[in-house]
Length: 367
Image 1 (cartoon, rainbow, N blue to C red):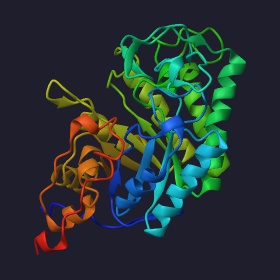
Image 2 (image 1 turned 30 degrees about the vertical axis):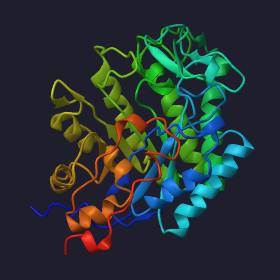
Image 3 (image 1 turned 135 degrees about the vertical axis):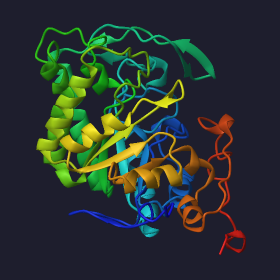
Image 4 (image 1 turned 90 degrees about the vertical axis):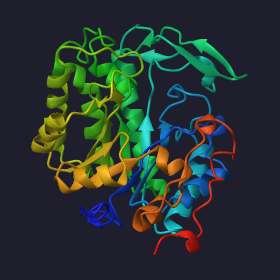
């Protein structure tokens, strides 16, 4: 098998042409002081613009939507100005970039919010675990405040408004973060959603929050520029497995198929030596959804190519390999070895471990 034949081939869609199927996965690098993408972000994204598509760090749609310290936002003018420069840099290098929009709900701490606003969630269910706050301290996450029906609708509007702003800034599209135990998944999950209004109870009601975001974003910026990230069965951020998990995601997938959005991005995790995304589940999604399917979760060039050639994916997202290999696409082209990333600087460290990984000199690339 040619280990990159499909991976490095172009992909045309009605609105966007991708130079290859290599996606830089959304990674929370936590270098945005006060939620503002700074000058180093221009370099970071510019260095990696040869990816067929880059997806940004998860980016907060509201001032109480930050889960983690020093993650970016897109809800105020200063943040937007920072992102506009990033987009211009990427486009100058002929790259494509989507912004990943997030509200982390009960995951976070008020000390990480500029106004120290309380955490919000579908219901008052506190998440277990510690989270980093200013002063390099780690504190327990407090119980969230339950969103009212009006507050829930305001959170939907915040995602839609952020998507509109993103397109105005020049982003090629938007990915809604519906995964990893953040606010949309908190509405999906019966452990964190104990509501009695129209956004809680049955699968259809628990899915309503996420699907209304997707409907609103697709209507506002175009379904052909709208994607979503999902992580079924991952159990992240204190989200236990539940009986209706498979049927809930089948319901969501069917609804997204009817909307005709650009892609579903499935995020898999390794648990006990196996991925949370089984081949059978991926095949099921493939049958239900006829848009693009993106897969993430520890893929190599060879394993990603295998999924493409098997017809189980259209795009493969790479996270950690892109941290230490800004020229990852070129290395795939040349079958060159990959540099290893420094895990100590994944989530902090300023420019160190962020923009100081060199591209391989062309003289050292295999011919």
